Image (tube, rainbow, N blue to C red; front, side, top):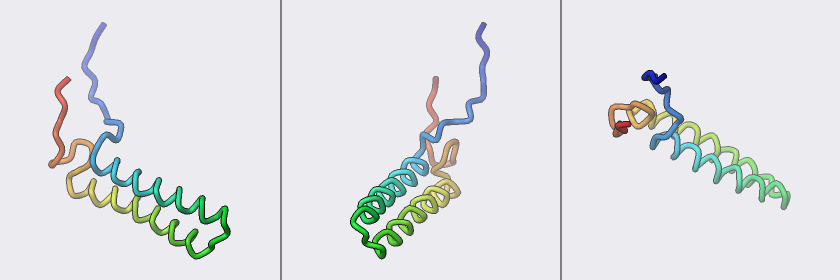
Length: 76
């Protein structure tokens, strides 16, 4: 039995990918800095991580999120 469902989306959008990639770079830098005990770089990496999440949110509000005005919709 098949029925059509309204998919919520899985975050496959420019906003989601941009936010996650920036956050992952910040986490990776922070991990290495923590290992080598470079405290200022740990805090800078935490800031980069927060900027990544903020960038994803802003891009989503600008229409680049799932079902945003500026994203291409896939036809299934």
